[in-house]
Image 1 (cartoon, helix red, strand yellow):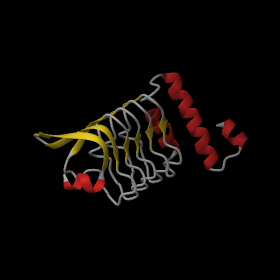
Image 2 (cartoon, helix red, strand yellow):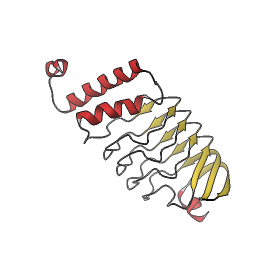
Image 3 (cartoon, one colour):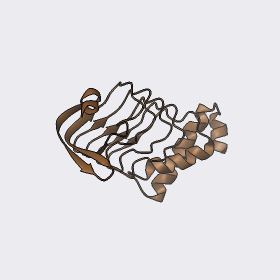
Image 4 (cartoon, helix red, strand yellow):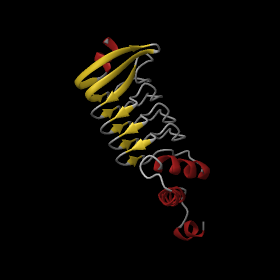
Length: 178
């Protein structure tokens, strides 16, 4: 509980349950761990189960893993500006609000992204090291949680590729010809 109190601002109440694998914390309210010098959300000491409000872990520049993040979040989940994240493994499986991972410049993959998002998926200025193949794969991963149909996935892929080509410096004509 000491690690919890030192690193998290919990607005609301929480319960701690013992399981065969450790401890699970459910929160009736919101959790904020913003601008902390941490590499792990929970240091393997516990996991979050369900959070009925928002879960904000943004501006944690040394955060390398989302392991221990809640399984479910009823509002938004925000891990923006966590510049050491390379993937989204450990992210919540279900988010009723929106999922934000803006400006996570070290992201190499959206692997582990939520399976279901009620709002939007916002990952702008991420993955500067993506290849064309990565862009196609990750556009699909980013679209499935909120718009799981082939037309939406195809449209997301086209938009993502246009942005990718523009960032590479291709002209409008070069982009259209692709």
